[in-house]
Length: 221
Ligand code: DX5
Ligand code: ZN
Image (cartoon, rainbow, N blue to C red; front, side, top):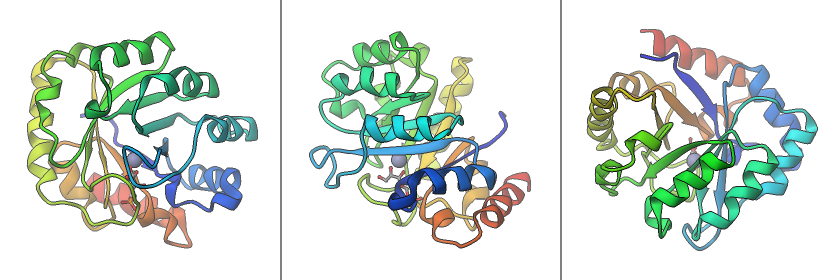
């Protein structure tokens, strides 16, 4: 198993002080910045675009930035996010007309690529693209908002996805997003995840470092 990565979701950060709050969560031990892009079309909420990502890079954020696209259409935003400084770009297969083409586009722009599965989206979208994936992201809530509760059926789905990754022999991260907190992270890791998005669990507490350390302690159990 790879070293677990903790990816604080800045959806729950202080938007009025985004650079500062992002730097703070990284200094507190976050590995990767999870950057949620919502378009009020694919999901019923509106968040940030490539300009905000570029502003974070200009502010001095050097950690990997994991762009989670909850947008439809997908393709035309990819060059802009890559140019702005994205490291990973993931998208929902239902939102793309041509999944294979979108994955290729992400790679051509020098980013790592991944597919995101909503709680009820079948893993069969993986069938012909495993060789093009760096990340498989399983949503453990319905996308659109932070602060929702983890949907328990995700655990079985994680086990299935873990098996598929191991059997494929490819180097693919298994990421989980939604309702991850200190109390459930060990169980989620045991089901096979190795990259953990957490928004409200971290930003909802005054001491980010303490929460991240507690998560790491749970992961070492
Ligand atoms: C939800 C977003 C998540 C969200 C998670 O659509 O994709 O990344 O920020 O927030 P928490 O950890 O609060 O469930
Ligand atoms: Zn997300």
